[in-house]
Length: 322
Image 1 (tube, rainbow, N blue to C red):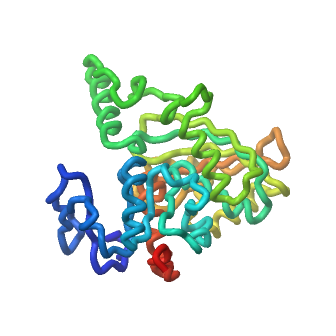
Image 2: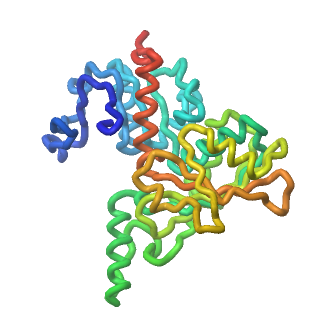
Image 3: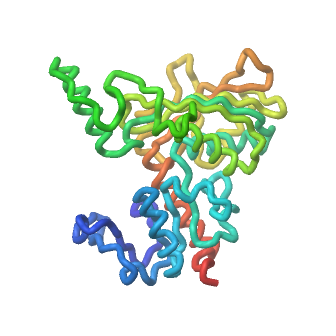
């Protein structure tokens, strides 16, 4: 918010009781964390949530009823039919007619659909086969610390601490599981999110999608291999041209010279990097893309702030109480 000079007269951070009074640097001033209760949440135009599904379930309606428009980063509201699921560069018009709560998509879905939207508009999309390589920061600070501690132990030839966040060692390893398996489903909750959210954001329930999500020992930046079957033919060079003109996308594609998107290059950036754009030799209407983005910025915080900016610019605040 500070970097983008968000036009706020007042910014108030809320958190649990144990964090009340903590000071947060906001450039020219400190923000003091306030307790979360029905009295303190009155009088706001926008509430940005990133506190988990149970908090969002409880407090989003309460902020809405107090007059704020909520932009929620948890998974709780995403698939509710009356809640728009919005990516700023992809489906901003979905904000129109909102009912006071707007959902921010899953980080892996978010960066992918930014790259897919120009292709969808130009030639249509029939099928997606996705493999993700997701960084540990997507799980939280404890996961970052777990990777650090395990890597340090391996390098120093010490006994590895037992994994606590992940089911297996993450340092120098790849775990083909992101989130959990539920009710005998062979797909994880993360994979189900990618499939369902992609269809909702792109506005096409007929797109066939298969996803495999893996956790890799990278601190920040999700990488994805995306196989796209288009409705109409699209040449790789045409695809590069489309993506080069698209908002929020940077084409990084000269593989013969070692130029392609890297997680370490995406970290700290708001754009989605796309490269390795090439024909699938097994299908005349399929392309392969390598898509990389910062899961903490565009995959979460940046899009939430972009949505708040759009709500302000389009005079869509206070609609729940109009």
